[in-house]
Image (cartoon, rainbow, N blue to C red):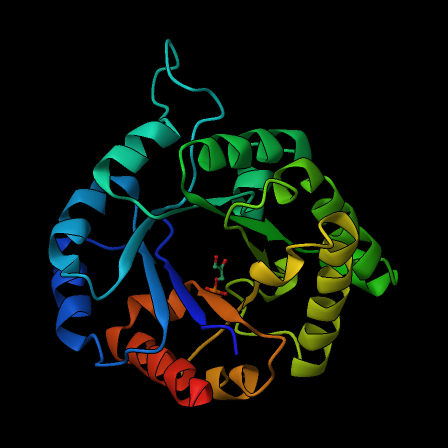
Length: 247
Ligand code: 13P
């Protein structure tokens, strides 16, 4: 079975005290991959505290290699520091910063070039789901990454239905599993020889209560956790649930 991947996306939250508290509450679980993704300013502190128990990621990256782009970070800089992964195309960035699929693909490409793993977010709006277009929308977002997906480098896809993010309303497990299968079939069409190396994560109101139910399904190869990752006990419980599912 694929090793489950648990990613904490702190978004624009957290402080040095949360780093200490997270490390303090961090459970002894060996069979789960964990990546903590704080605001970029805290990456160095988190890397220093990691002690090989978890990896550290970024929430976004510049789409250029470097140069005159004030305020931007290059994937090569993240690699130099020891960052393992970069979230790209989160729906909050797509909405707040008008990032379209082409920008997301450019960012994922920079991440791959730097030897890091992109965590490419996809997901439909509530209007798209109500109109019966959820699967078509998500497949199109995956298809837009085809070139990156064919690279044979480590990639994760995070399915995050927009209406489930920060709302406390998770997708039903049935709907999540169905979408993960649709994404898996899209990946197999795009990259038949190595689609099975890519992990598909679910994100959207994952918490200590619903994690075990999600992990009970082999299609849910990991989770991308927002709000609950700021609660150190809940986050530890989610990691434990992933470990228990791993057996
Ligand atoms: P919540 O877990 O707060 O719903 O956020 C999900 C998310 O957007 C993770 O990237």
